[in-house]
Length: 535
Ligand code: 1PR
Image (cartoon, rainbow, N blue to C red; front, side):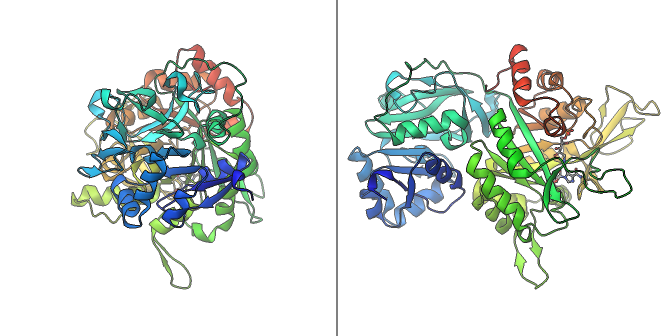
């Protein structure tokens, strides 16, 4: 390959940069990995998708001489694009884990979002930007939304104003991108920002390509509410991985054969939902709790293929826990998660194992640091760890009938009960546990979850709307984002959940698989109701 078609990528191995690679390839370039500091200095164009924690990244870069080479490369005004942590590291220091020095090229300190400003941390989702005129690579962005996922941010000041090319508002007005000459860095993820993200990468890779139309002014926006398509996958009785969908978690047809209900092929459907405008796609390997997921090569293959064509975030869940296989080899949950990340997942989701971790934490009052939730969030960051909750409503006559948090329900139970609690289950709803969704949510937030995917067994597949009582209870109990799931049957259910609760996202499966309601109709409806969405 000629040097002109090569992009040098600085990947120090701390997380998933597969989607950056996929996006670069999609735009017609080949990827060359940095092996030595010299590769940085010799690069024609360098992309630095920072992942993981600030201090750990600086540690690696300083030890192997990359930090010095990076500074020299940037000082020489060579084409550079930093992404996320790749932006933050350019600043003087970060408050992540005390005060840690950065590369010191841009004046300013990277600090944590303050949830007392009324925002949920991490900042996860789609925002529009306020864009400076000569930002160049953002010329096609205009009023479009781009995807952020981070807990730390740098702030604009008099000292760094000649660098700042766009800002975004989330509690504070923070730096969304910087530019000086050929040096660019963005806090958001262009490789996960759909078509508009690909166009940002294209402008970086082909800086001389003419503009098709005059740039439109970007005025910024509130954080958009996300619409997520979920694919429950499992092997059918023939051994093929298929998308299925249950009614209250029962995925078998009620026929003589009792076969697994099949609604499509995972890679195909994920691609379809990306094109249709899904803000995220989730895969839940619903039998992962009993099968070993790394033995489940088709699932890893599904992720690899899906991530080649889906440029919005991908979450994968099912079976993330410690495991010993038939030969006695032990795999830690961290290894399982790492394999998912390597194959293209942006977030992993933990179900059953998070319930056990929360139970233990509440019993002992001690964070052991050993649960899968704690280990994975320590290595990959809170924002990469979703806890998927599968609660079932349990009605009670009196508020104090159980020691767990009860709520007054909107619709009384079958015997006129006015209260209920939401019992957590494991193993795909097969076993109820002595912990409520409320207690679980608060515990997993403390243990390092970055987001909660809140299902509801009673509502799953019923098409009667989300369980508003439950979503309200949980989204008011935590400061991390909550994804409402289970029960969507029409566009009005989405506006209802966003108007009546503090959910950050709404997820649906059945109505999308059965093609009853296209994703764009959901978005158009939300827009009409005055709710910020990414179109
Ligand atoms: O426990 O870590 O192995 O994770 C297992 C994962 O698989 C969990 O996230 C759990 O929610 C999921 N799961 C297990 N069994 C089932 C099942 O259906 N039998 N599916 C299952 C969960 C619920 C949602 C569904 C929404 C929206 N499915 O994912 O997509 O309810 O559906 P709707 O819009 O059609 O109402 P672990």
